[in-house]
Length: 177
Length: 189
Image 1 (spheres, each protein chain N blue to C red):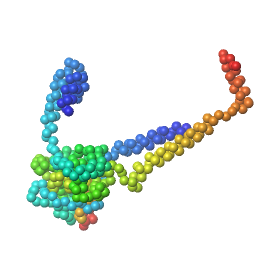
Image 2: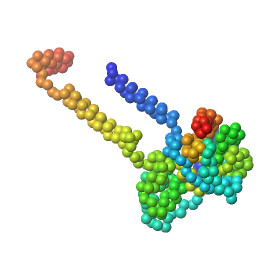
Image 3: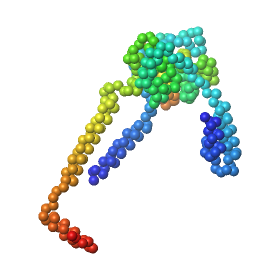
Image 4: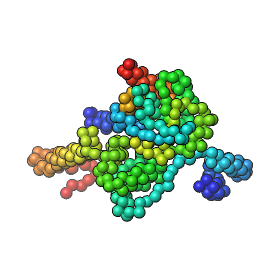
């Protein structure tokens, strides 16, 4: 009797493993930069091309770095929510305008609004390489000391904001005081 | 591509993007499809493009050869089933450019791989490193192979025991002959 059950057991084990596999997104990669210092950058600002912005400018506060581009469709999806998050004033949001034409980027901000305190321009994607960016939008939470604490890949919808981003930001703010 | 689909699929078999229910209804549907495709083509240029620096091969053939070899072992993170060598993705081109720059600066392949894994993790390596978390991946198949061999030998041994010929005892032989003789319509010799 038992020997007839063996194929069934094997099947069930396989099915469970495959079912778990189906729920996982192969594009979601664990960032190796978590709890490592954020890569240093010093690049022009989007709205004021003659001014520079550096990661050192944000030292001493918890901030978000949101990698975005006008050609990135998923970025448009999260854009209205970004504006809401920015208005809530919980945490300053900085942009990294990734491999984008300046005029396209500015037109997008004109059309949809600008949630960013400043957008840094990463024209050739070099800053992106340092951050391990592989697909916009990506959002990094960086703490007072300039350490990356969290990374989210994909559009930051309200449930993500509430369940993943806010708790980390609040915890970091509490620790910083 | 879209144009080809339209002329081949629609005219000959009617199995293009839009199914055609009957011959008589074909013409208006064909026109609708053509019109829709025309509109789709009009929409295409609205999509903004990513800024992509043109890829300039290095004038040093040694560097190009090294890049070829190295990028075959690296994964493009945008198109995860392609290597850096053959991916057309923007990120792959950026990384190839970065590798060229570093090679020109005299970095070894090992240093470049370290640079990349510090940013993108071991996932960028097509050939996974042998670490504690990848033991199962590297050695699991051999364990399965050994297990399978054991089961196979076990089975063969058991089966051999089952099918070894044992001579019949005198009593069994007598019963067998009786049975054969009792078969109806069969003459026994």
